[in-house]
Amino acid sequence: MSEYLTLGAVLLLSIVGQNMTVVYAAVIVLAIKIFAQVSGSPIILDYFGSHGLNFGIIILTAAILVPIANGTVTISTMIDSFKTPIGIVAVTAGLLAAISGGAGVPLMQENPNVIPALIVGTMAGVFFFKGIAVGPLIAAGFTYFVMALLQHFK
Image (cartoon, rainbow, N blue to C red):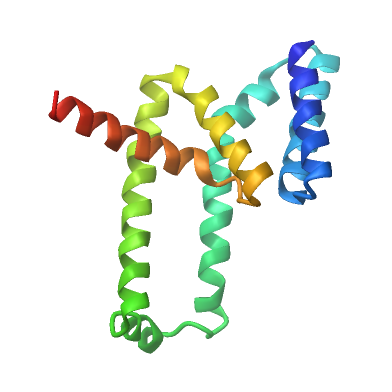
């Protein structure tokens, strides 16, 4: 029952904070949870939990590729991105974010106890700072790097 209260609180805070992305996500998860409860089979919820991240990354990557498909971004504009300071910083940030996200997946698999903290941090960023809920994976990667640095200097 507490999972319904927690998801309901996330939904309510999202509505109050006018963050429709989290509203939709909370409604989807609540609907799947209710369906799993009514059907007596948690398979759908488990499947979504284990594969949803991959689906999300696929959809996000596809959306990022649309400017290439519609001709807004060309080979020339991609090459030009290396010619300005903001372009170089953006390429570097994209590289670091991808590496961080890649390190975050094994961290979450090996230390599932870190997931609640990542969720709380991401939700706080969404609710209080108008962030976007893409943070848990990258936050896990940052957590991995910080922990690796601390181990290195120990």
